[in-house]
Image (cartoon, rainbow, N blue to C red):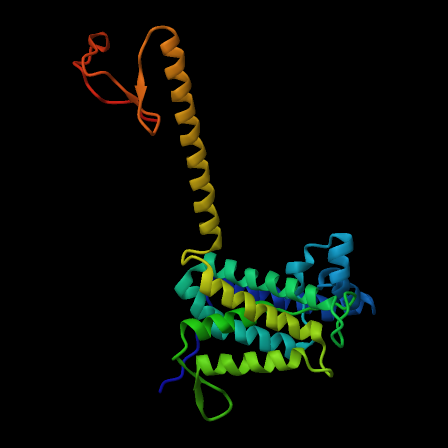
Length: 276
C-alpha cells in the first residue's frame, strides 16, 4: 500500500481559499472592529430559516456554507473537501463538480429549514446554521457510491477501511445524532440533507449533469414548438392555396412536397423540399 496526497484541483482550491478568507475576516478582522461583528455576520450570511422564509434572505441558502464556527470546524471541513472533492473534480470536471457541490449545499439548507419548523429538540427557525458540511457530506456519499471499494487510510489510526463502509458509518452517526435529544437537530440536519441530496444527484441526475439535462430538455421543447408551428403554417397554406384553385402538399414535418410533373418550377421535377 502506498500513501499519497490528492492534488489541489481548480475549484477545490478556490473553495478552500474562499472559506479560509471569510473565516479570517469574520473571526479576526471583524472581531477587532466590533465585538458583535462576527455574530452579526452569522445572522446576515448564515442560514436563518425565519429570515429566508419571512424576509427573503435567499442568499443564505448558499452563503452559510462559507462561514465556520471555529478553527477545528473549518480545518475538518476543508481537509475533507480536499481529500474527497479533488478526486471527484478530476473525474467529473469542474463544471459538474461545482454543480454537485452547491446542489448539496442548497439541498442541505432546505432540509435544515424544514426541520427547524418541527418540534425536534434544539430546532428553531431563528437559529443560524453555518458551515460547509452540507456540501462536504454530499461529496462523502458520492465518493462511497462511486468509489465504494477504494481503501481509505484513517490517519492517525493504523488501519484502512473501504469507502462504502466508512460512508455507511457516517450516515448512521448523522441519523442518530439528528434525532438525539441532546443534539441540535438543525445543525445535524444539514449533514443529513447533504447526504440525501448527494445520493439523489448521483442516483438520478444524468451523467453530464443537472444543467445539461435541463438545457437538453429546454431545447427539445423549443424544437418541438417550432416543428408544431411549421406544421400549422403548412396546413394553413394548403387551405389558402386550395381557395385559389391551387393544390399543394406538405409532409408530416411541414416540408413542401413538389408535384412530380411541375414544369413551372423549372427544376426538372426535382423533389427537394423546403427545409428550415
